[in-house]
Image 1 (cartoon, rainbow, N blue to C red):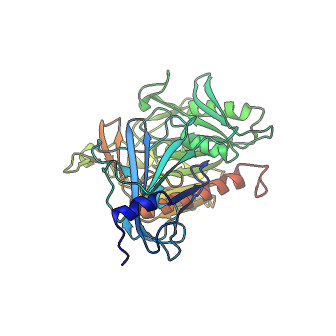
Image 2 (cartoon, one colour):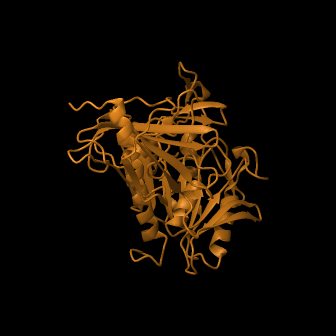
Image 3 (cartoon, rainbow, N blue to C red):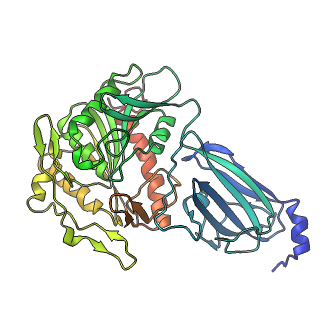
Length: 436
């Protein structure tokens, strides 16, 4: 095996070239990572780091240069580190919180008007670089990873009761409208909406509690609010008026199903790891109140680390849970259920199949199920680092989310491209693949 002295390493460091291309791209774009001018068969560690607010994330992998002194990440296997095998985007999806930070950190872009700045470096030998600082470098470079594409407009929304952020692609075309919602942590998350708009949709990132002057508690929401949001989005001159698409995660999923069941203005729904029933509080709509499945607090599990597992706190197989199930048999639009088999927050596969069984019992065929093994609750856009434990503001502690990093990453990449195709097919009448 070739031995490289520190003196030779210092000489090599002036020659080694690290290329990450493109250096500026959307977060769902792949990049090519190449190291050149190494010694033949030289062992190196590739290291990636980013800082978002006070949170620090990093990853690393071990490679060996080929006989030409090159490492081509898309073609050569990682031999160790946070992942192994040929993984072109492994240095992104394998990122973990740097040591010494509080548990439950989740990488979410809060200010989409700025990119993630990812610093890459190459180090001699096979090292464990987590938590290490001021290690000798062979080469470095920095890349920009954006949710907000060139020319996409970001417009604050305060229309009637509706609160959120509108993202419009560049140009004068009419775009398919999509509403983007998350779950029971409340507030407003913009990053997925910004990325969807960067891929050609007019997207309303919709808040529904704990934001601006909205109710502080999700127990005070009503379905009429979401209809008002859909009506407003469809009224915009550059938004197609036939109906909205909805992408929703967790608590947002049951709201999306409820909208599809009771409103003819919904064109397509992507339901990610949610409940098949109204949960936590009854849901009023046009003078009717849909009942909720109550939480069975005795089924809440606290792990030995003090984290909570809420998978079993709802029972929709018997009353009053059955009455709380969303009347999905009334839906007319296509619904794509996305479910992680290792979701430790919600029994996502069970709830997706419960909704599908109800649809089948009424002769409905307007559903698709994407079911992913070793995949947890937080299915995000591609190459987002896996998060198996996250802080939940409602409980003021960390909640288990599940998933195994490599499989979870594969699910995120696969589901994202299918979500884009689903909306192009079922929500965008101007798309070449449209079925409208």
